[in-house]
Length: 191
Image (cartoon, rainbow, N blue to C red; front, side):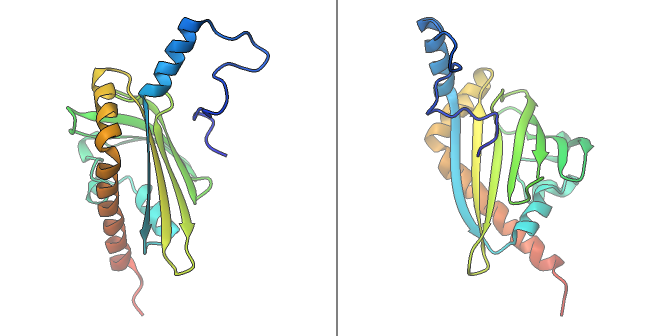
C-alpha cells in the first residue's frame, strides 16, 4: 500500500457518499492531477539495502559526494529520531531549488521522503525508495519521484521532467548507486 499522500487515480477525487463536485471544480482537480509529475526508475546495485539506507540518511556536509543534488549550503537537520528525520536539502540547479523532507525509514526496505515545505514543490511531492534483495546478492532499487510544482518554476521543471526526467533521473541515480558502492567498498571491514 502506498503512502497516504499519493492519490489513487483509480478512485474518484471525491469521497463516496458525498455529492459529486461541480464540473468547474472537477476540471480544476483533473488539471492538478495532470500537472503532477511522477517518475519511476528501477536500478540494480551491489550495495546492500543497509548500505543504501546508511548513505541516504547520512546528513553530513559531504553528502553531495553521493547525492549530487544535495549541496552543503542547503543542508539543515531540523530534528531526527531512530527511524525518521526532518531535513532540508537542495541545490542551485534551476535557480536554487530546496525542499524540506520528512524521511521515514521505519520500514528500512520501503523508505518514504515526504515534502513538507519547498520553494518549488507542493503537497503530494516526495520520493519513495523500495529496496529488494535479489537471489544473486544484488539489490533492486525502485525509485518513485513525485513532483507537484507550486509556482512557475516548479511547473516548468515538472514539465521538463515529463520529457527528459526518466533519462536524467536514471543517469544521476546510477551515479549515486556507483558512489554508494564505492563508499561501501572502502568502509568494508578487511579480512
